[in-house]
Image (tube, rainbow, N blue to C red):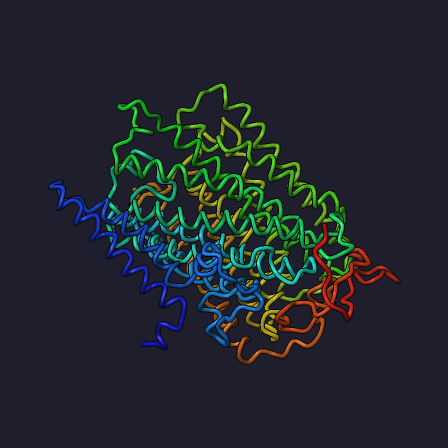
Length: 618
């Protein structure tokens, strides 16, 4: 038993189960003592909330903060006793590298879970008529597919940012190590609550949770809202930490225009997350209050307005697209010069374009509401602001094209995923104006065209770059290289499968097939395309399975990664692999430019001096 509870994750899950039972029992007891009619919904909500807090308490996430509040002496994070060996990945730790790997594990796990949901409901759609799913379960799986994969993407971005950013800027750790650990672990009970919604009847609202469906649906809606609420806290606190780290912990000599492009992208992303995430939490929280307490925020009969919910929801959920894709676009710009052996074209413009996308991204949310009954005079301004996003995005495409031009390209697996990302994201970009223009959006809104476009944007802006980053930095994490052969199998299966799937979705959407439906008329010509889309989705799933096999085999038996295997100029490849405990043994001094690839006599980007690390840069 002691061995079981020595593992932080298992201890936290046990605490969550006990906390949920206590919360449920507490509300039930209060109802009985006051003579009120028994209602299970508030009991489950209080239980779910207390269960998540119990998870964190059982894990020990609050332990040091409680001791500080009492006035006790607390060790510095780097000196605190932490789990060793494989247990450090399954418990509380303050090392940004281990936390980055923890985020990565959770991201890949949620990717598998959310992808499995998609395979199930796509199998249902492969043939007209209901085969094995009910309407409610179908819609629940669609909603969980969307929200679980959104959580997976957020965790993947945090994995990428946590592991690489301190290394890229010459820091020894994140600015707030304890907050960094808390930011990860608060997402774990949130993810568990999301999946637990299935046990309470699921939710038929789709991932958007629109009222009045979300107010009248089964109790699974409550767990859906609570799960997203906790995952949102992870995003907000992680963003705060990354902003502080990038602004305050840069190595001496690293001016803002010597920052790696990935750091610029993560900084822009973090500003969006810090300022917008609370809006989705607020919209879900108000819907939860309307369910539990009868508050009519979105009920017209009580003076509420359902359009208000959509404004709150989309004020976060469209900028969230840029939270997802900006780090991916940063990965493309960061790695492209390494494999092309040329300087990044237009470095300053690319850096500023991330902030241009972030700024304009706050002004485009209502294009999701052109058909929702929004005031007509708002349509044209939001149409123009939506189309304006193409300008800073076009800066990145121009930079990538110019960087590739006459470069000495090395087609290693990361480079294949970079090229795939550019092609697929371009597909998402050129199919977007139909949804941003009022006249065409009114025809294709809520069709499978939207689904195909959105998947192209997510795969090109996040999935392909994330896989490129995995293959590129895996040797730095483990000291071993991933299999090039399996990597190329994965790439081609993913690229071909995805293109068939996404283009097929857009085609049937233009023909009139609605999204989020479990059945369709077989006489409309949708059956064969849906079968092809399902088979393409299976190919995508198999490609991800190949990735998991590659990760496992390479971690155990992969070729040893000795030295700077990619001939990179960035700081993390100037130190041994796997990365030492405190990153850089001496002070890091920046002496050159980050992307001077292929230039004769170009000084190194940075040097690690053989003396104690200096204080953070101002």
